[in-house]
Length: 346
Image 1 (cartoon, helix red, strand yellow):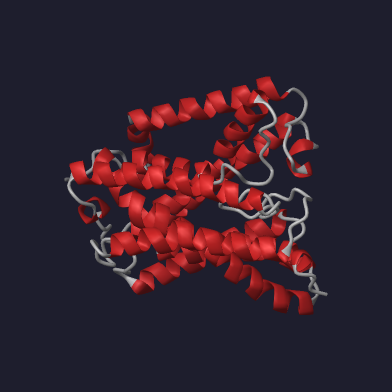
Image 2: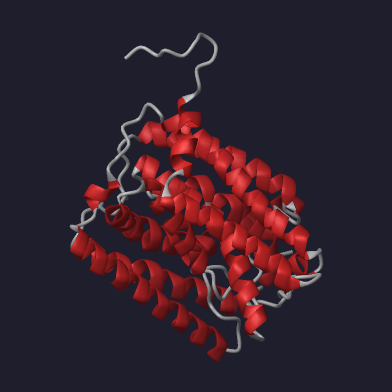
């Protein structure tokens, strides 16, 4: 079909999709939820957010909220980059990798219920040893709290999350589904590699320019010892659990149930955010503190979770987000100083 638009006025295909996206009910609900979350945070927080992290509690509440909102801007920019890099690819049908809707619904509910139990188990286990509750991030990861973490806590956190969120779910679902159905096989390795390198370079530049401290603030000896240690513990404690639980298992089922890419991206982001419920900076001293913690949790983590979901949907390969936007940037780049301190590396 020949376009009737005058020369020089053609609208890029990506921009033409924006009005269509804004008409989606899931997108409208997400935008309304984002607006309500911002308003409630500003209305209930007063001058400062009551969290166990100086970077969140010391600045005015409005500043902390705007910083979290800025992550959505970065994520949407990265989505545009990913869309451009994958626009000529054959996009895999992830919904076809999930079972029929009744079984997909049952499996989704079972996995989510199991996730709640695993979160409760991590909370009780961490507290039983006098440590922080085990969440998808070890205390002081990404958001610094200043609360002490001991080596045994870091090792147990990584082991628990690896078994609870990766090993057990993978063992159950791998008996029924192939590697392709679990998004573990690349359909275009070279294209995936290019995408990984581009996103990793962009995200690394952002993290190293904004994060303080980062791996750049360490001595060569600390970096050489601390980076591999951080990578291994982060890979076991949050990267593999995230990949298996959300992007191997839940993402295809979300798409099967919703028949909507935007809805799946949003659900993936929300799931990823809520798995961090017991991160060390959250505060549950009272109803208001608890509500503010959940609201900021959603504001801070939903955007990265959405981008990870988007990467998986565009490539059909859950490993892409691992290397492009999780294991190295941000965790190894910004969490190595924390692990160096925990394990006393000099």
